[in-house]
Amino acid sequence: TRDDVSKAKPYYITTPIFYVNAAPHVGHMYTMILTDVLKRWQELKQRKSILVTGTDEHGMKIQQAAAKAGVPPKEFCDRGAEVFKDLAKRIDISNDVFIRTTDQRHKEAVEYTWQTLQEKGYIYERKHEGWYSVSDETFYPQPQVQLIVDPPSGRKIMVSIETGKEVEWTSERNYHFRLSAFRDKLLAFYASNPSFVVPHSRMDDVVKQVTNSLADLSISRPVERLTWGVRVPSDPTQTIYVWLDALLNYTTAAGYPFTPGSETSGGWPADVQVVGKDIVRFHCIYWPAFLMALDLPLPKQILTHAHWTLGRQKMAKSTGNTVNPFWALDRFGVDIMRWYLVHEGGISDDADYDNRFIIEKYKKHLQGGLGNLTSRIMRGKGWDVRRAVQQYAHEESEEYPTVSNESHKEGRRMFGRIRALPGQVDAHMRDLHPNRALQALSKAVADMNGYLQQASPWTAVTRLQSVAADTTGNEMHELSKAGQSPEDLEAEIDRTIYLAAETLRLVGLMLQPCIPASAKKLLDMLGVSQERRTWEWCQVGKDDGYGTSLVELGRGEYGVLFPRLTSDF
Ligand code: ME8
Image: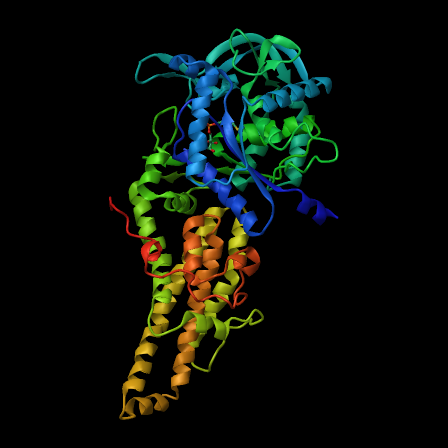
């Protein structure tokens, strides 16, 4: 059945492969983290998943950068790739593959692909003239370039209107891919897969572009100009265009050319491919067309996210307007950066990066929100979380356990909200909006803190204590005049604590994909057993066994969940 097949095929998710010509910045880190959170969400659901990241090492841009650095290109790439590998490790990216386009296996897959495309008649040779941007590694048609005066040099230069990058006129013979032949097929595909590109606004742009014009694509350069790349198998005077080479990394990493009978075991087709909005055309137009030409299945979805800006300018290595991710990690730590970038990062709209925002959001949502709720519940005096859980956790209990008292209306409402939370968060994740998923979790925590303030279990605790301490019987009398017994008060405290504890448990479970270390700490503190940390336990009342901390609360790293930042500015 279809279900069996989809179970057999691992979930497959990719990041772009990054150019090694400059050091990674916060933008690259963002893409990696977003991808990792989506992958770990699948793992929370116990689905076998594969994450691929890596480096894009061929092409004019790298060739020129290596020459400028005076280093042989391969050595230059080895160094660059190492830095991206280090970053992936440092931020706890659970990549199963780190692919480099200079890997032998990949180069062979590119040659094989070229031959296949040629045999199928999709490649032809002709003279090509046009404007090429080395920085963007792409040709631009005449209407997409303009003459400007370069402010620093006063020189008149031609630039791409879209990216502002300099272009140069080139006239040469090279090979072309019959992209135009795929226009109708692409449009039909988009029409029947309206969420192929996320978000919708970019899907619309893609459809518009393909509708307007789709020219054949130059896919090789003469070796006199470009040596650093894979040679055209049938013609050693030409080097394969870097974007064709680069896009194929996704299928190489999944085992292409596939062994007949096990086409899907490496994960292809991809479930989600995550890219920045700067490379939409390559991933949403060229890539599906190449795959169609190869008779390979298309990725299910392309998540195109917005950019981080710095002072409202795009963070980009070509302009040097960047934040070094290693510095940010040294300063704030891995989990804060993972959480902040996903919580605040843009899918549709750009987000501005600022240390002050990181501090502000951390204080508000993690320290003041989740951290505060955790210590209120786990270190509060006068109740026993374990007892409350034992009392009220029942898988089948659909309703918040009520008494006649009016004040429990709000409790019932909170209970309903917490019960709906996993479904809401999951829906955001399925829509590929992890930012909204995290924001929903923050909101639930904030609301629970608000509710706790109002329900004020500590008041009931004080009340109980004074009843117990009062030998005159007056307190007891007052209590029964209000129609209550000490047992009622106790039950009320337990109900509130149970509600808060369930919030913490569910939020902790669902934060595991984003902040694995802090979520583990929280679940340890709550006493959630190792085997009960998967998606099937993300249901109110499902786990009746937690509540006794697995660690010594208040000691060492379990002092507080989210400690004070060492500096506040
Ligand atoms: O384009 N904000 O590599 P690249 C958010 N090698 N994300 C950003 C960003 C920003 N300011 N700047 C960069 C390439 N990114 C090609 C890809 S794939 C077959 C080949 C992220 O090193 C974002 O994901 O220029 C963007 O698409 C990617 O880095 C570009 O990285």
